[in-house]
Amino acid sequence: MQLYGALILCVTLSAACGLKCYTCAATDPKSCTNTESCPALADRCSSVTVEVNGVTMVTKGCLTSALCVSPISCCEGDLCNSAIPAGPSAILLLVSSAILKLLF
Image (tube, rainbow, N blue to C red; front, side):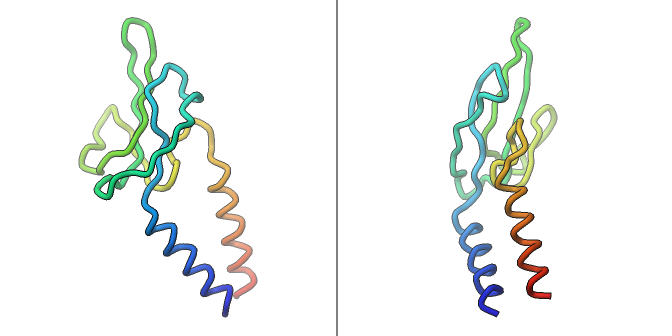
């Protein structure tokens, strides 16, 4: 039962800390390593790629869902706008499944 309480506490604390997204304006999507805690109204991470004079630019940041229109792609969840699959998401999935396996 204590594990169940710890799981609820972790989920509550992560929700209270707000959304985190990668932020950058660069030519290489893999170079976007800066992270930012989004403002309260921003509920999505965004990514847009545009080509200007033969140079491809990538811009990543925080947005509200109302502004997520083409060519901007948006996603939900911490650091979901990475070009590289985020490791913490996979680890969180494995840990949560192990906890659920122990409880049920």
